[in-house]
Image (cartoon, rainbow, N blue to C red):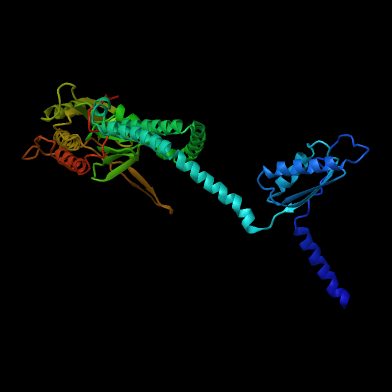
Length: 448
């Protein structure tokens, strides 16, 4: 029974003993000179005095005692840390006449004794900071003055507004000026404090952080750069009717992130600038003249030349079509049950709505063809049942149709204006005035 209690107790004691700092018994740093044959007490006393004098001049060895007998130096007491204890051997071995060293110094466990050096270091750093305080204030004042000067110059409207093609680029110039002066102020402050080596560390860390942020916000940076390029070389103007990647609408504004369009149905379309910069852009507003086309399918038994002449006369009859470029008519191809003819005419799109012009042209051309007895037949279909009976339904006449009776009131061509387009332009103008500052198309810039 007693053995059961003694065995765990011995294990605990052995563990605690292992945790207690042991005396430094290292053989390293022992003298390697020759040993004298005779012992000299006077020399031992002189060695002890010399070692005590040396340790008295060093911090951390106040509690170390020295004893010398026959050239053998025995060191006892406590020191603050293991590095100081190990340094004793190398120090004492350099004293002449030392034969061997018994280093029995252990680490001190006194709390006050271990805290005193730390407190002294803190007090020394505070005193050093106070002595440097006037220089720090001068350096900080000089750096802040340089930074203030940069912000003062950036707030001025001249020369940035004159140099930049638009307000967005002017703001970029101002940000660059602020950044340059901030870096200049920091460099000046560190140079006055003789800490320019710290600047390399700061710039290195900033570069790594900037690289990480650049990968994280790659799409945002791409949009930002695309915004700069679009604002410098503008492929469109405000209110222009454009088609970008299949999206058609009038340009409301160009922001630092996206291009905003107003569709012909009155809906907002937001396109990222990175896509707009690389996309195929069709600008319908750049030229004043614009052509519209439409397809007609006439009866296959009709006189094609006569039908073309009638269509061309009808297009020339319209009051809004242009004589130069002149309207055109041509055979597009053979349909399932018709001869397909394409009609084309030009208008001044800023004075005439192209949608209404096309609709009026179709109305008048259809009326003139029907007045001449040329019909526009419907397609022919064949329906086959699952039984034995087959039914054929056709709208294609087997013979040339008779000319219809003339109507009492012939169709007359009407003038078409740009009322719908003007109303849409007013909506766009109201949209632009709602956010006048958030637009990169404010000023004129070279167009591509």
